[in-house]
Image (cartoon, helix red, strand yellow):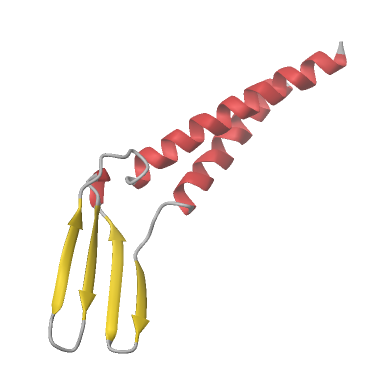
Length: 98
């Protein structure tokens, strides 16, 4: 296996892992009686924010069409970017040998 192929595969794997593990997750914040929870939407359709106090709560839906909201498309985009970086690194290493 030559260096270009190996670096493309390594770039794809590292990019996919980076995209998967950096995808937005739910987060909560508690400040006194105020409880806030924010989580990303499913399939890239935005997110949800819930604010709860002692008397009740407010639910806010946020609509977004960003491909980075969906974990699967984010992973694919990062994998492609990693593959391109690996391919460029393979060409650079190949030129140094000549």
